[in-house]
Amino acid sequence: MRKALILVLVVAMLIGGGVVSARQEKSITFWHIQNTGDGPMLIQQAVDRYMADNPDVNVEVVPMQNDPYKTRIRTAMGAGDAPCIFLSWGGGPLYEYVKADQVLDLTDYMNADDYKDHFVPASLSNVTFDGKIYGVPVENTSVAVIFYNKAIFADLGLEPPTTWDELLAVSQTLIDNGISPFSLANKTKWTSSMYYMYLVDRIAGPEVFASAANRTGGSFEDPAFVQAGQMIQDLVEMGAFNEGFNGLDYDTGQGRMLIYAGQAAMELMGSWEIGNFLSENPDFYAEDLGIIPFPAVEGGAGDPTDVVGTVGDNYYSISPTCEYPDEAFALLQYVIDDESVAARIESGRVPPVKGVSEMIEEPMLKQIVEIVENAASVQLWYDQYLPPELGEVHKDTMQALFGLEITPEEAAQQQEAAVAEYFGE
Image (cartoon, rainbow, N blue to C red):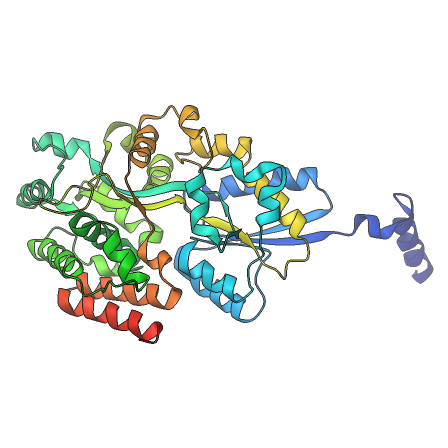
């Protein structure tokens, strides 16, 4: 029996010319958070194509939910056990990893054959530090917009609001008719931040945040931050949000369920929500869903064309501990090649590549592209612009602000104190 087993092993070793090492499998681990709608399929299709073309490479795809991922990647980085490919939103958190030598410099890869020219230039700004590129923009051009139920608006004779005062009037009419103006699932905290970011921008423009965050003479106690907090609490107190919003989970779709059920009329969310609406409830998407840009604030200094979001959304980076960086980068090229771009557009996404506007026919996606193209400024999400510790403080503060647990002044003070302490002031 033993001789037979040895013979089988020898034969197996001799197959293919007798060189065992020629079929040695290379392994790449790929972490992502595309776990809703067509997201998992879009990643897996690209991975399957890559492995079919590269049979000596095995890719382990690990999808996770948003917030658990943030904890897991921090733990993995701290333990020196990061996956080959991991995602970020660029900005401060990625820069922290860059400074700790935990991200591979991709500049040479991006410059080879002018590959970086495949992308919209603005998409690379959030992953470029000191002239070097550390991530590949893939998932989406994502900006926060107000999604609304056109049927509810039509039934109540409402017009989409273009100013804050109009939004308040629309909200009161909805409340009077037993409908929550806004659906909010704020257990994950970042969902509420969108209101605050937009209001600060509409009140004072993007410079007020940049100067406070970069410590160039600004402060998070600037009156614009306090006023934004007060306007939010005015909404909460008038009943503009569904009950129990701080306990509802966005990642499991609890916010969208209120929209589908007609219990809420609007949702402020990133444009990635288009893909979720399209895959979960295509009839609602086709018949009743509309988009409103965030309204202007009367007397505000901010440009009402400004948007909050990112041209790139999820960026994919490579760990310097990855044994096969060439293969990992080649895989990322599959994830955003022409075939993947076409599939992403079909699923309701706007890939951050040049010429995408000519590829899109779907009206709602065209509207998103127009909003971005006409924007005077694109403000990266605060919790991604700031270093991770400060991003967490910001999100905690937002949840408390919306929960009426702190005053607008206290929210501003807490954020300013955290930033000042972080920078050793």
